[in-house]
Amino acid sequence: MSLLRAENVTAGYGEMDILHGVSIEVREGEIVALIGPNGAGKSTLMKTIFGLLKPRSGRIWLGERDITGLEPDQIVRLGVCYVPQTDNVFPSLTVKENLEMGAFILDEKNLDARIERVYSVFPDLKRFHNTKAGMLSGGQRQMLAMGRALMLDPHVLLLDEPSAGLAPKLVELIFEKIKDINATGVSILMVEQNAKQALKMADRGYVLATGRNRFEGTGEELLNDPQVAKLYLGG
Image 1 (cartoon, rainbow, N blue to C red):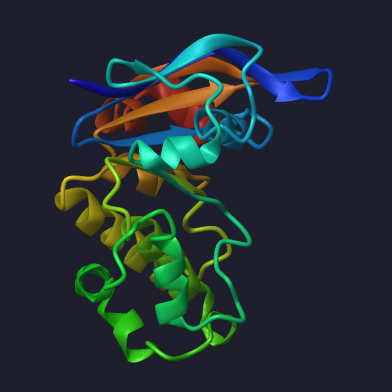
Image 2 (image 1 turned 135 degrees about the vertical axis):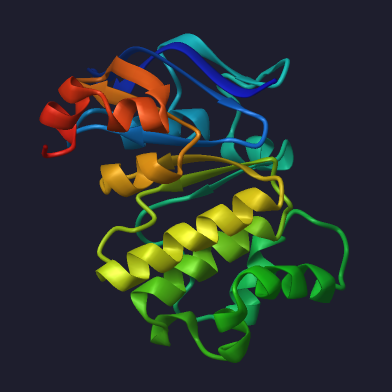
């Protein structure tokens, strides 16, 4: 069943269009990878889906609900959370305080059970419960950013370059954690420059180029497509 769809979306900044009629779909329980060269429009599509940019044309659907043009706080309340590539934690707040901030829209005061669920996915964070986020390593900050998004039990998690700037061992760890999150029932749309690893773990993928759909298929199909490999996978 289709959970999140972008249909023929055109969007950009100022007078410049970056996306030219892009369409993607995330089905329930899937990991979907969005790959392509720098400037292809991947992050622009994420921001448009999440309401940070308004599409000039096209529609965005969450299930049967048209969410085109809604504000980010409205989209969060519908079960979609977004983890940007940079500036994704509050460095002056502790790990626990960051997680509590993730539940800002909830009325409940006792968030301990939600925090413990996050710690069950990211046990490393529990050791730094009272440490300021600015003192964490890059990988730990990325886990905290994802953990904060999970505080709302989202249906869909949007991840923009989760492995950016991380050492290879940490990249593997972050990808393992993404699989763990998906195993809890959260569907994931992920923009990722580490295209080979992203496609290996993805159920399906889309390749964008110059703001347009170029290829789509299962992760395995895209990995084994000679044209995709030559143009986008360095092989």
